[in-house]
Image (tube, rainbow, N blue to C red):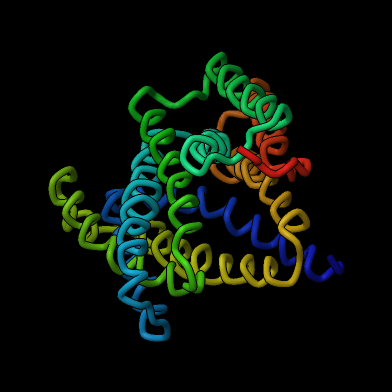
Length: 287
């Protein structure tokens, strides 16, 4: 990639890493599930009027609204209420090995020794984190793992939905996720609207930043880069996301600079990098 596009890729990763910090601060003022609903409301208002989907694409978009909007982001935001931003960013990387396993089981994609090694190393990274003081409490950890699973399932669903642009998928799935998130907020969160009424700039900035900065602008640039360059040239930059989030968390909001967390993050990123390697060419299946 030319130097300009490399800087763009790095800028996108910085936006996503800062997004975890911004959300962490925001959910202290607005309940997390309601924050997610407000984020997707803003995304749908800004994107849906300019995109279209077909009736055939609707079932896939509805599924994505649940797995990506309600499960992935809803549970990620909820987990960040009681978990460190940096550690959460590392745990969320479990989405890559989970997606790999699901692709092997569901789509019958080959795993290979390198990817299997990556899976083992990724799990080892979580074990290292568990030995340190920054592992999230059990409920938050369960929410993060479920969030990572939601992201993994979403990748498989999107692979099956033909002919829809990334922005159309983002806008319409956001629209359909809003009622689900509002219902979950009504059932699970108390004094929602009271907190909204008294929310400070952290709460509202988290909604605006995550919707416009992280979703629309960053994902828009990312998809543009993927259209211009090979996946193998672009995707490896995402490996910097958890490391930058850990660094931003330590510098900006005083997260614990535990050496165990740094080591666990590095081990897990190494495992995910192996999983994302392009597999070697295999002979066609003649069975």
